[in-house]
Length: 145
Image 1: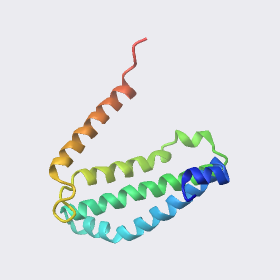
Image 2: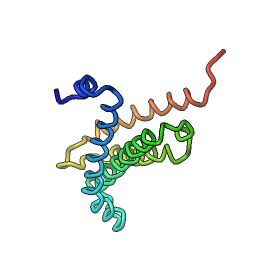
Image 3: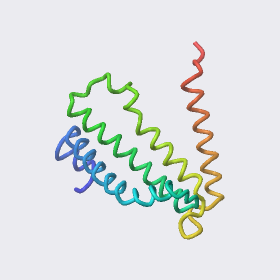
Image 4: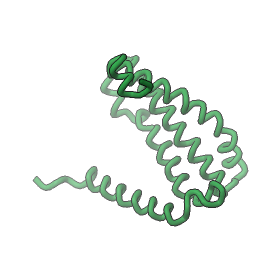
């Protein structure tokens, strides 16, 4: 079947999630290793063009995935301790993902001088600001009783 629904059907949801986590962790680790030299050089030498910023974004985003999936695997192997879910280190992947996402949104025309276009970058930034505003309102403003 070759799909997540097929894995659930064959293995059950718990094993399908565990295998899925391992697969994503493996692929993400490969991406991190592949992009680490470019990201390192861009940061070390201050290479601030679209392709290098995008490379930093790819590296940071997938490093966030490595941390998230690795943490999820460890959490499951450790009996799913509830205290982990609200600890400071648990959310470290969120910061990495934010850095990666921001790099993706500030690297117009990084690929072949056209992808992504400046127009769609502006639209993406507007969407991001709208979602951020709605999220801040939802998290920090008490709903009426």
